[in-house]
Length: 398
Image (cartoon, one colour):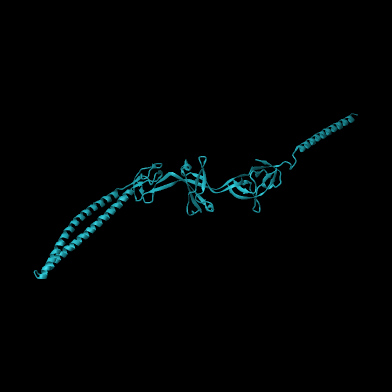
């Protein structure tokens, strides 16, 4: 009897456990069904895409280069003669004016040579004065003996005096004539010598002026390369002077851009947080070894204000303008496999992909035809271009 009761209790317990398990399973299934019914159906919710509105405006086409700020004029000051430096009258950072003496060279030897030339000139002038007096005396003697020779010739012809006496008088006249010609030649030689000495003195005085190395214009000394006692030689740079009253931007243009870039084009750059404008004023006539051409833009006072010589400045040269064009971000353009270009636009909540023609690009914008201003253009997606197609329902996100 007791055994039968125990078996019955176990059976009841098993039934209770099975019932509880079934009840829990039913509750779990019901909850999962509720969650599944509340989940969004696949393909019902539109795909979110980033869009911007196409705008009507002007596209400025730029070419950007790295420019360096430089003075319009700078001079590497050197000596015209070889001499020892006596004095350097300026230092780096000194402001100088045109004609100001910057360096003095040793001029003692030149001054001594000038003094010797002056002494020789004085001696030659003294000799010339004495010789000119001799010439005047000889002229009178020649005139006298010519008259005597003429008179004796007449007397000899009449037989009043011997012919030998007339010949002796003529020889005397010829002697004084020769002495006069020699004295006149000496006068010419002395005058030539004086002229030569004066030219020599002039050359020495020019060399003396070269002993004073002067500033070519108003400016700033930016480099000093010598000290007193150094030897200055022809062509050796002693100082560098920059005229900072006018500045320029210099940059290199690659060969492939030369068809678009020419003198007179406008350019833009930023300094002190604000945009400044200028113009391309000069292109060098030939390419450098790295196949670039040097370009320069001389800046006006306002554009150059606050710029530091030697600083690098990004420069944008305006090579063209497209007026009244539809403008879109460059990231919205999609290149087709056949070379065509198209964009995705959102129309009535769905995607369309019209083909467009690109008129020009500049940085992150492009001018196109094929869509209207104000249309919503897709610039990026969560899923990528490969997952978009025409007719797809999308949700524009700006």
